[in-house]
Length: 177
Length: 228
Image (cartoon, rainbow over all chains, first blue to last red; front, top):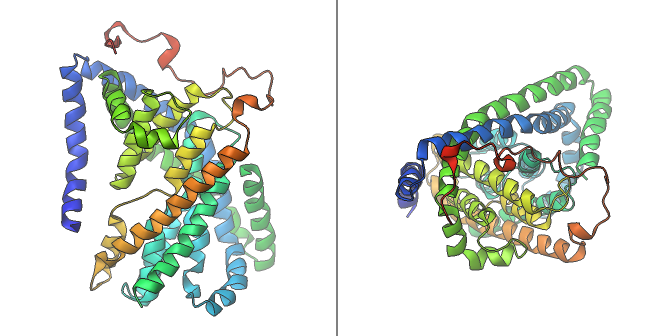
């Protein structure tokens, strides 16, 4: 099953890259000219995201460097122990929505320290894989079209991250015990 | 809310640094973060240029419309306010499929294209429409079938069964996505649609929204669209 999905993933992109121009040619679209015409837009879009991403990453990177997260984690960690949740994974709850690279590094570190087949390693892997980096997605997607009022989108993203974190912890505790 | 979170991060960071004596590191981190933001966007340029070129062919060939129609019952349910057959639905479907298959670098351009199409339907270009919020909810909780990066890391550290987390990840991501969709629905009902809200910036007539070149009539003669 897993191998099949891996093969599918490997073939998916080349298949799409071949299929779209072929279908375009069949429908008599001038494929190369249309490609370059559409591609032009990509540049402007990527450049337009820069201010949004710089602003957000400055704040997140300051927050991580200041040690403020360790203080918050220090407060909540003892409470988790009582609920039977390994406190070592708690920083992931904060890191995951903020930074994809940062939380991946933290997960890799937990896996290295406690072993991939330990409960902590399994929970960390599950948390890392189960949601995306909410603040990054929000910044890039809304930044690309110039949305300034995000309404309830951030709340939805962050609450679902919390739900995903708790689900990952309890599902792992249940399955691997 | 983004304004408050941003302010919170900066103020709390400086305050915490004053206590922990990490002021130098925080200053350094600010500039590292800025550099990182630019680096990521430069990485995005090649991906966006490539995929947006390819997707323009798909759009002009009518492929996105077909995709939108094919899977419309599901998308209808999630995006009731997007007219059926609109290219936005095709991009949304492409974005969701790319996410599920774990094709991260294809998912982002499709999602951005979907946002740009949704922006055309948005009566208030500075405010997120309900459809945009739903698309964002789907992407922040993104369902992924196989977390390939994690399996690779676990393999790297000598796991006896690197793929054993596939099932738990799938279950957790399903719960997170269900929560995101349910919450999004709830807010949709609670909040008035954008067109009923009083305009916050009366002078803003949408000219500064997205700067798309598509509809400005500058397309070369070769780019004429085939009849739908």
